[in-house]
Length: 416
Ligand code: FAD
Ligand code: PYC
Image 1 (cartoon, protein in one colour):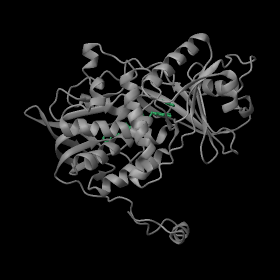
Image 2 (cartoon, rainbow, N blue to C red; image 1 turned 90 degrees about the horizontal axis):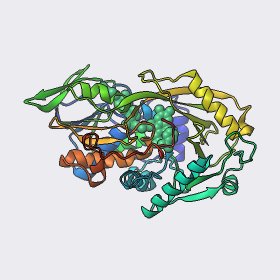
Image 3 (tube, rainbow, N blue to C red; image 1 turned 45 degrees about the vertical axis):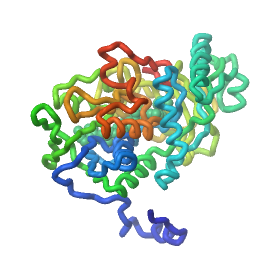
Image 4 (tube, helix red, strand yellow; image 1 turned 180 degrees about the vertical axis):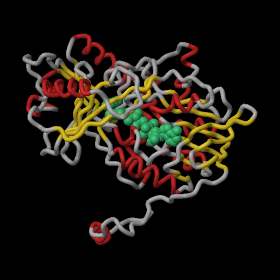
């Protein structure tokens, strides 16, 4: 892949964005593909990349109704961790974590993965018991984690009010040192560029409006730019997944909710880790630009508007001011929302369906960014083999019939 010198960087800085070389092609859709992936977010792009790289399936199109990485991938607060309670979920997220650790090298693209650690705070005795249980379970699965008391939390994050004066005093936290953040758009662009280089067609501004079948099996997608034939169709559309499923008469156990976040004006570095509190509905980190990145729990109503309620974000900012009194006078720059697809057990669906050739990867809800490489990796296997990847076996749609749910609400880190 092309590398740039300091001179060329300088030249481009003065070019007014003209004559820049495209980082990926802008192809016209072919008539037929082996696989059409619906949704050009991080997960869809990662799926395309691993289909091409690990399974040699390169006759693939990613069809995106907007621009690549413009959905929840663009709207998330980029927290990456693998400290889930149950073995099935912990192993899946840890698979993703291991891929994150080599991703910039693998894609030859800096995804700015920063392992600055994540604290999940405990504010009462039950929180602390849950934290101990989760950290013990993590360690049994070979996942790093420690239980900290309030003094140890204060040492890692001096900005946090760990005094007894707080309305919800900090009693301790779980601490995952290998957790952290990554740069969301770089993740989408890195996967897009690498998939394109392997021959995948990235087709933007094209909305899938129907899924066509022949004798029961999938044979392609209807789009606002015409029909595209495909042997397999894989839907990776987060908050819009139910809409796609309805196109073939499937009902998925999903609810779409707004989830919102906001950023402050940029300020000097004041916090070099990530702090999350499920109990008070707020979490905060600081971006490389200096903005404080703050997020809320889900808005409890269903909706497809990419914004949340004023009450929701106000409640979160009040909680953040209690946790970090020093930031009370920092001004907020902007707030936004995404549509998250929640399941009854707060775990994803990575699955074949009853329609031959149709696959769904959805239900990541409030926490799918951290899974991006792992999700694409196991989903590509599932599509290529028409059989779940061993790490995805527990996450098929069948679990909602069999009752083998994997309840990860406690580890979701964000209230819902
Ligand atoms: P998306 O990025 O949403 O991609 C799906 C794509 O499908 C979209 O680009 C959409 O335009 C496209 N699409 C939909 N319908 C169609 C159609 N009919 N035709 C063609 N294209 C279609 N997760 C974490 O792990 N850590 C966090 O810190 C975190 N913070 C979050 C904060 C907020 C405010 C929000 C909203 C979410 C957060 N998440 C977080 C969750 C995370 O963003 C998602 O789980 C993840 O980004 C989902 O990725 P995706 O690629 O599946 O979805
Ligand atoms: O899953 O860690 C997470 C998360 C943080 C913010 C939103 N989701």
